[in-house]
Image 1 (tube, rainbow, N blue to C red):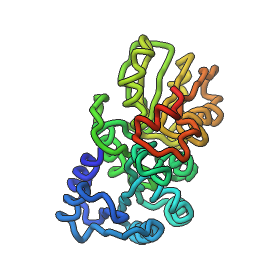
Image 2 (tube, helix red, strand yellow):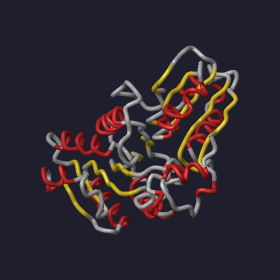
Image 3 (cartoon, rainbow, N blue to C red):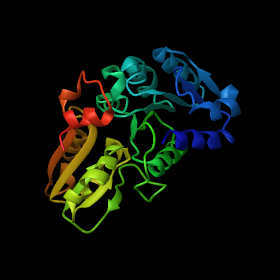
Amino acid sequence: MRKTFIHMLCEAAKSNSSLYLLVGDLGWSVVEPFMKEYPNQFFNIGVAEQNMVGVGAGLASEGSHVFAYSIGSFPTWRCAEQLRNDIDYHNLSYTTVTVGSGVAYGKLGYSHHAIQDIALMRSLPNTLMLCPCDPLETQACISFILSNPSPSYLRLHKEGEPIITTKSSILPCELNYIRKCGSKKLALATGVAAQDLFSCGKDSFDGWDIATLPIWSSKYSGPLVRSLAEYNLIYTYEDHLISGGFGSWVFEQFQIHGDACENAPSISCKYLSSEVIGMVGDPSYVKSKSQIW
């Protein structure tokens, strides 16, 4: 995902001198291609993420599209006030890009866990959520946000994600089916949780439709709710705590758009349990001790 992100940013910068990449003194071995090819459009702000948002807000307020890259919780929770006041409320073309979703950086401890970031970012009313599960969905997400710049959150995993989807373009709140067999049951994931679902859980959902939702926002969710209402049972999967997470968002959409359908499906959420808080270890170990599947 990270390599796809940098490659597409480099391609976009060829024809857009107002596209900027900011980093918080990390991303080395990933961001160098952009830094070397477009040094005047690249800034290492240092370990000062709140300042990074301020610099990005200044650039975006002058018409630039800014991508700000860091690990999980650093450009999100550490910058909550700046993201709300400087970016979202002014509806600026600023994309927060994080790497290491869930407990991907489990060995580095809970300061690096991205398990509450969705709760924060989706509470910002103008911010679009982009949570790809593989390089193809990453391509689809970046293509959309480059064509439709806005406050947005691109949530990437760490590395080595196999391609499990087939579409390189997708619209907000459009289901990207991994398997569709006409079932009345749907297993639905966002982000890298779809990888776990595909590799570990698909046999448990034999005969079910399986889909991902890589781009989502309540602004676009009306048609999605009508599509989901065709199912009797939906399981949501995520590498995030339940409070304010993806499953909670799906529930909320039926409250917002419930009048658009006669019957709401039964929804069951699978998520990281709160036992993950404070745990340190390999991601597979941490998830095995804390995830509800």
